[in-house]
Each structure stands twice: as structure tokens, then as C-alpha cells.
Length: 302
Ligand code: 13P
Ligand code: SF4
Image (cartoon, rainbow, N blue to C red; front, side, top):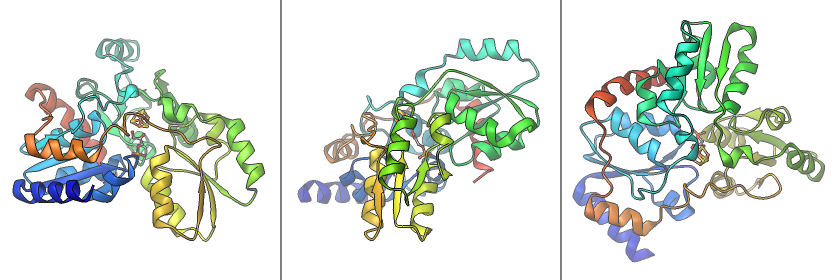
């Protein structure tokens, strides 16, 4: 492993590359990355870094977002099969039908989506700024795709200020967290703060003390005077919390929740990506030109 890390560092230097990694990546990738963050932080970084190559340790929609925001850079996704099932749940045809049914509505798309869907949207958002993006858009009716759980949460916060038209997409990792698990954890650790991701179901969100993006959860638990936390999200983030807060205790909801796609990228994949320039993200110019407008809207609400 030491040899591989050394090789990656040398290749990175030689090729003027930077490694961006999502909070759900495996521990050795988290440790190796130049930057580790949530979707919004990584998008902002991708738009601003000065390197020639971005190696994106995450899933495909994240690398595509980086490419759209930084078209002059080479963006590499070390594992082509690291996708996000939620991003593929809605088709362009389905979105067009929704637009026809609701001609006055604007479209806000969760960044966990394909480039074609982004190109047909008025704005994108992440879990960190969904409430702000939807709240600021100049329409009362909003088609919010593809995550029904995040959409329901945004609707709950905004109340009658906005009417959200939802789609039946979901993240299989967060949707799997059951309210009974949270109730059981509350019994086991009555003093613990419950912090969940807004991709979780509404009945789980209703039991939480805080509802935050992955990096929002990190900041909250680091700053909180509390010592015990039940964390309703993917296990990779819990590992990072434990590493960075040795005096505190972090528990998953009964059984750990794993995103298999986020776990596909290993050190060897990153070394191969740097050595052979694989797998380069290429996006059709006409799609990219439209999608960047929706992503620029998202970056207004950092
Ligand atoms: P954030 O890190 O932006 O909260 O996103 C979570 C997620 O599920 C990414 O796929
Ligand atoms: Fe997609 Fe869920 Fe995995 Fe995030 S955790 S990449 S939303 S499947």
C-alpha cells in the first residue's frame, strides 16, 4: 500500500493532477485525497482548482459535474462502473411530460442526475442548498427531481411558500433507513443526537435533531458539545467522523448503510487513472452549454 501511495503521489506531481473525493469513499482513498467533501464543496472546488487534471473519486454524476464546471480540464473517473442509481431513475422524456403537465413550473434538479436532465433544468441543487435554491427560484410551482425524499423535506421546510411536484426517485442507501431503527437507537442511546441526511424518508427525518448534507453533519458533530451521535447516512462518513473526533461516539442506524458504488474506487484504480488517463469524461458541447446554466444557479447558494 505504501508503494502504491508513493506512485500515486509521483504521478500526481508529474501530471499536475488533483484528487477530489466524496465523504463516502473508502478510508484509504479518503486519506489520500487532496480534498474531501460533500457534493457542493467538491463542485465548487472543481470549478476553481488550477490543476490540469481532476481525478474524481466518487460517482459518475460528480465527475460529470466537475467536467461541466471546468470544461478546459481533463476529468477522470477511476471506475466507469461507479454510478448513482438515483441519477438514472428519471428519463428526459419523463421530465418533458412533467413540464407539459405543469407549464408554469420551473425545474429544480438534484445534482444526482444525468447531464441530459441537468440540461433541461432551470437550476440544480445539492442536499446542502436545496432549500435555498428552491426557496429563491421565481416560480411558485417547482418540478423537483429525482429524489422524492429530499423534495418532501424541502416542501416541509418551505410550507405554503412553494408547491413542489415530486418524482418517485430515491437513494436506495438512505431510503433503507427505517424509522424503527432510529427509534431503537434512541432507546439504546437516549442522550445521543440524531443527525440524518435529507435523502432519508420523511418518517426518519421527523425523528432527527438535525437534517444536513454530509459535510454539514461533519461540521455539526465536530462543533457540538454532545458526545454521542446516531448518524443516518452512508458508513463512509461515519468512519471519517470517528477519525476526526476521537473523543466522541458515532453510531449507524442499527446496521451500517453502504453505497456499493461509492466503495468501488480503490488506490489501484486511482493509480491506473493517473497512469493511463482513464476514464476521461467527455460531454457533448450542446448539452454541456445548457447544463452549466443550471449548475451556475446551484453555485450561487454556497
Ligand atoms: P452530499 O455529500 O452532498 O450530502 O450527498 C450525499 C450523497 O448521497 C451523494 O451521492
Ligand atoms: Fe447515489 Fe445514494 Fe450512493 Fe449517493 S449514496 S451515490 S445518492 S446511491
